[in-house]
Length: 318
Image (cartoon, rainbow, N blue to C red; front, top):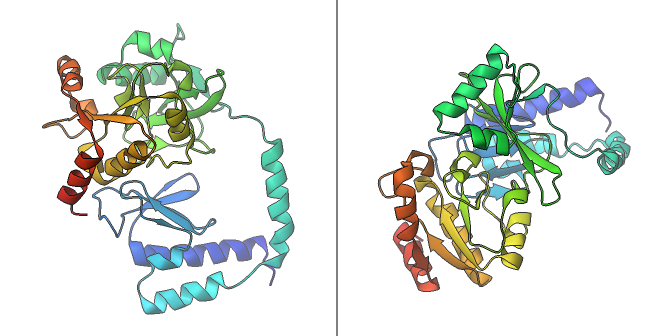
């Protein structure tokens, strides 16, 4: 059965309607939608759903799958969903191969079209707001220059601070776009894979590294790498590089990421990596910790053995 473009759009809209009725409200991030996770019930929308890929993943508890139908519990809605996904569009087969060729020929990642460096001498009013936002967050002028931070004054990344990431060869491999106004969606991801070692060019692999949640957290400790909300699977580029190059890892994730942290710790221990936990004590995330406490917290970091991991797992409830 073949579909026109309008037919494909109608099919997508029907699927989206069923997902919304099953999971509730959402907001969009590129071609994905973020819902509340029905499994861990995190207070933020962290369940990423991609209708085109028929896949979902929670960035908190790692609940994932390649069949969106498993998210639909209502019998009638499930029946409607099955009737839609069982419709095969044979006219799209050629497009699949064209899509593959397009990615082979695709240029390397580029910064947004309207990216402007914050090192510019004559900043616009928007640029001044972007710079003020960073300074208010405690980011130094030296770090703004070192990490080549910029902003966008127009386009899809308008009113966002843009922080580039470079691989070990100095090639752009990702960037973070963080809003500095009242946008509901704080972060907007670039149209590429998040499976990168963020700012690998600045990492000294001969020294212990610190794994943190996000880029701004990574400025708290030297030689830190943000995991960008990932669960650091054993097939990820960052995990494989850690295993091959690093003997000791400090881990300091948000207080509400306990389950994800345990999974990362287990994987690192399985591959013989020494893991030390930096406690946040009364703070919910690393960004809240005053600078004068950082050194002391790292000194107090505790070595995690396999026995410690098992005890923490039991304490967490499984």
